[in-house]
Length: 493
Image (tube, rainbow, N blue to C red; front, top):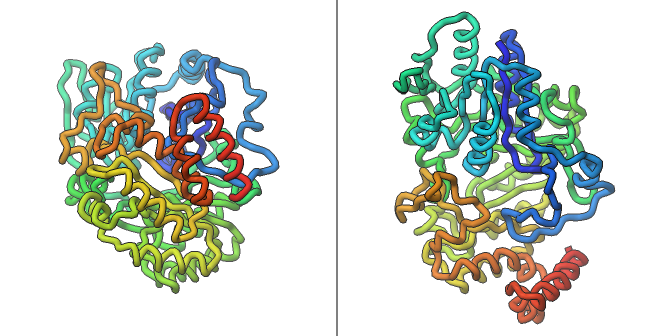
């Protein structure tokens, strides 16, 4: 059985998706043949580096000996559609397996429509197929979808297809028959995370392992040791997922420390990885006892890693343990500097004092902090955005990521405000256009301007704020002022 995985990533948005990597390992172990079509390093013919519109506001990083752009500068421009067709024609897959998030869903669908699949069936998985199964299964080019975890379901599907057995009753799969009937199968229990193999990074371009950090370049990528999140934030789909899968087992669960240590050891041995980003929703939800066990197992590896944490999970003892095992960076959610909006609008029952205490602990252990901030929130005013800026300034934050809130399907914000995230042609409204939902009391233009200048307000002296206000504009003068201030910020950071 020949399976072609399709990773529909935007150009140069690097990072090996663990879902595909684990599925590849499982299928290979069972004797199936696997290849990958990955758009990450396919340079579009009309690609211009400066035309990329970042999802987050302006952020400055320390310069490294070489950049990702250096690694791709000699790559020719190609037709992504033609490259996809070449892969299908040469590999002749029996199944095309697509894993995609909402952000890449339309891109994947457009490519699939434009190629001749030679009758090869398509199965869609990932977050978008799980949250919006009705939308996905009714697309003409989709034959099956996987709702939820796919490790056991995809293997069972491939085995059945290879053996000529029927596959319309496989749990977690929705299957479209030739006459248009859709078989919506029951959900299966969650997989045992300790029985999964280490991710198969071999099918990916090794430039995915480019990991710049504080002026140096390391090798590594994402690794996730847990699944689920008990949080019920209104901008996140975890609330919906928790309800969908309540019969499947405990929604939040962790691997045993020995499993994580074994996998990291193998990834370092095979690929030279020494820098990992844990993709867990909130890494410090694990009990202290398990963190200590993990520390003792991976400390000899001498690896570095970053992780995401919630302020209310941070204790000095836990941070100390993470520092000892190699943690050098933490991403922490502030969301907004207004407590009322944080609690009543976002359902984040975390106070400013908790955040301040948490960041002090992290700073005391010399772990680099980056904050996660949202603007354009329901009911938010300009002064509320500056409350967020001021909180970051008070906490002496050097790296702040700011996004315009996007009301994803399945989130409480989307349902509360009856948000439709699709255009008349059926395609998704891009994340880069999130301000058009007009959830805040600011104009979309003002929201975008504050996203662009957020880190200027954060990093530069207040006497320069009148100039930053000019830089919020879009005219020639505003652009000149913005570029000048950006250079000044780069020198500070």
